[in-house]
Length: 391
Image 1 (cartoon, helix red, strand yellow):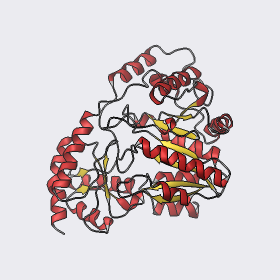
Image 2 (image 1 turned 30 degrees about the vertical axis):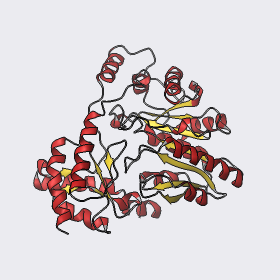
Image 3 (image 1 turned 120 degrees about the vertical axis):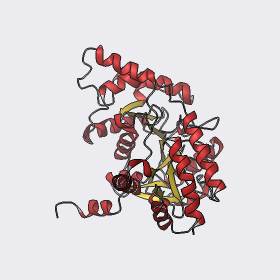
Image 4 (image 1 turned 45 degrees about the horizontal axis):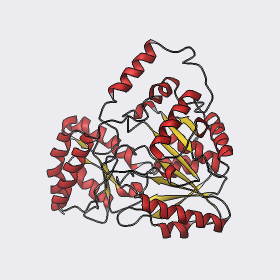
């Protein structure tokens, strides 16, 4: 066979998210699109803000000279300065353009950071439940994922993380607001974790970098979402405009390295090199310019809040155990039976598609993405109740 044994194994155990998304397509062909209630994919349904549309139209109609040429691999200098200035206001960290790299989405930012940091066999701590692609990203660059469970409320267990850190630990990935749970990590907890990582770094003799995946930071229903950049010194903040500007198909993101990170200048150089050698070359030119002046803008989250509240109340009223999300657009209820995959199959018979928690490293749960029409939620709630009552 031409493909590698490793990739064959990865495909066989591929993301449950995509698997269920493809099942949804199959069922829609069989039963009609309106009959299938699909909560599988975190694909924003809200359109981008008008300011983005206007800016993109202006750039297309009046392109600045050289718009479509190569630029420095890290991005247009003026764009990086604009992003740094906005992030500085938002986080309280004195960033300059040299601390920012424009990337092909948050996934691109994470991959270039991991490429820059990892030697073969280095470990990266991942908190379960997790976005499953993290495991593949770490493997891409010769690393090993060290999975640590979160607590009953899906919050980081600082003591467990400390026990998991060893000589090979190079980094930890944080994700708040979280996919798949929607949980927001409180600032006080992040500060405790920062102290714990500092002590662990002293014990193992090298920094433990925080790679903070923050594409949902502006999709929030609580008063504050703390960026890790404002708490951790050895931090690479990775984000995109896939969610806050509803641009997932445009793949425009960024990475910001804390100005006081250990060997931060060298790390930025290594990440810039990785942008080129991983094949990204640079983030899309026209999109860099389109988002540069929109860093304080986000879509209106109230439609998502209404969907969250409707789905959460319906699930709880039907007897499900569920943590109320503080951000993002996911719910992660406990499955009524221990076998979450079997329960997902039961929901399939009701033409309700969700993703089993096993796909996120936490069995006994399932994920619903509520970036869907309100009418889909309204029609799904009786089916979700029937599936639980029928056990």
